[in-house]
Length: 416
Length: 83
Ligand SMILES: Cc1cc2nc3c(=O)[nH]c(=O)nc-3n(C[C@H](O)[C@H](O)[C@H](O)COP(=O)(O)OP(=O)(O)OC[C@H]3O[C@@H](n4cnc5c(N)ncnc54)[C@H](O)[C@@H]3O)c2cc1C
Ligand SMILES: [Zn+2]
Image 1: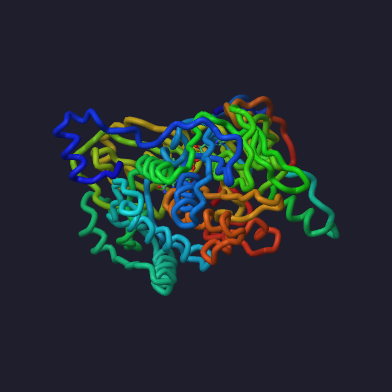
Image 2: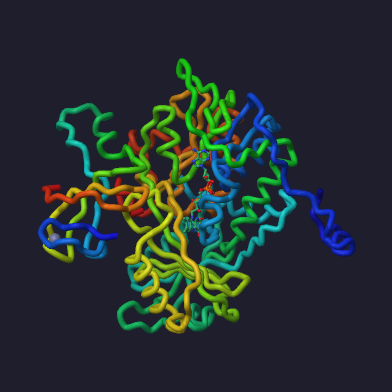
């Protein structure tokens, strides 16, 4: 069923009784050409692009919970392509371009909102670093503007620029950045993939990967063995556990990141603001709640919940930046488990096991990457070769010294 | 989360800082590159008990080897150590 304004009207006039489910709930077939493990944003996008760009439709997405129960439904919905390093910039800019055409491509309203992302700076050296980053972005064809304090003041009312300790000196603005309704991304890709024949297998946990003579044969699941010529892993925070089923030991640690939503208020922030002196990012949802988050908790975790020191820290940053937020109550708080890589950058590559492909290491920034990640992973699986856009995201780059370390923090996962 | 410091007693996790997994023994200087790569970059990343190093930075400053369950955050033990 195609969604359109006309369909909306027709269904409204008939009492909204004839909408059909957005995707099927099929039983697993004994075997598929390709299995994608993980029904998050990246797995579902991969299935869509496999079917649409490469004509590979004998595909199953195997998800242990319900679609979108992982990080794709837990993130703070920010998209941007303001990266510095050559391995990253073209990839994230490709993702931004795919976001710009996504809703037409998948016939789904994902509420892509290019409201801008403004990174604040608080010292001369930080401004120099942002000038450098902005120049690198513009050289790569990405939009970037360096704002001075007066321009920031005019753009963001309510912002405290005059803190004695951390005055706001300006900011780096990417106007094409913004937010996207995260659940709708999962649902939209799921529906688009399903409509081309992809089987979405929910409540089906992968418990083993069958490998023989160095070649993948399929996956063991809670609903029995399912054969496949090719298997792609896109399981975000659970990558180490799932990859170990095929004997792989990875440069990954699982960490928890928390997010918060305040009670709803009138329009207050119409862009995305990030604090440069502490760690805070905040935007306002269409329902009026302020959506914000900060640093990861900093210790290994699979618990999908965090601890109070980070809550305290995030609230302090928020109130320092927007003093009026001190009167708000926060309504909800949650955590998601992310795979932190050793240089802070992702992996989209083949593995030493023939037919087994890996998509992981997205840290706390993989939502913005969802379209390009699915696009590149589909290309890598379909052709057996990485695309130029993900050529730098190799599994063996740490061993060979070709790290992509935006922060320059070294092999310390909790610092990226 | 609370960590039982053997010197100061059970204290809030906010008083501590962590560098993550307790590292395996350091390879010898002439060990092959693969050993150094594994030492520096690869992790077991278990879902369950995990050996890690914490320092009581806002207390006695002692380094601790902590056994903690990554599924529940429950701390099983904390012993003084040299990192
Ligand atoms: C609080 C928070 C805020 C964030 N904010 C942002 C942001 O503002 N911008 C941004 O770009 N990124 C952000 N991120 C990061 C982003 O959400 C992730 O990098 C991205 O969603 C990961 O890819 P995914 O959507 O495929 O993951 P997921 O949705 O987690 O998908 C992985 C799926 O694999 C499934 N799975 C795991 N093990 C198995 C198994 N054995 N068998 C079958 N299925 C399995 C899981 O159930 C899960 O559904 C944030 C993350 C968090 C936690
Ligand atoms: Zn102590």
